[in-house]
Image (cartoon, rainbow, N blue to C red; front, side, top):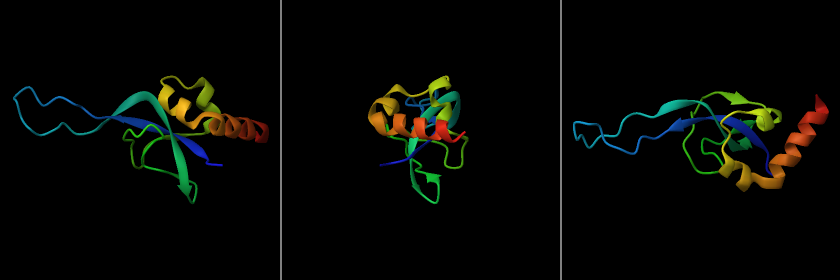
Length: 96
């Protein structure tokens, strides 16, 4: 069963700068916005969350047990991870 971690989300501006530049603005962290990312090895989450959006490569992480109370959690990640994430939360909660 896959394991997940909470990771900070990054915003990707979709519009060009007001000057009409073709260059996109840099990625910026969005405060209080969390996604689930699958743990891919050595307890390190994937750089891509379950929903496919970009995240901070070395960004903020939080225990999955905080998922239920996290403000700004991604409903799409929650839906896609489904029962596996809920089971992991329950297992981690028992261990504390």
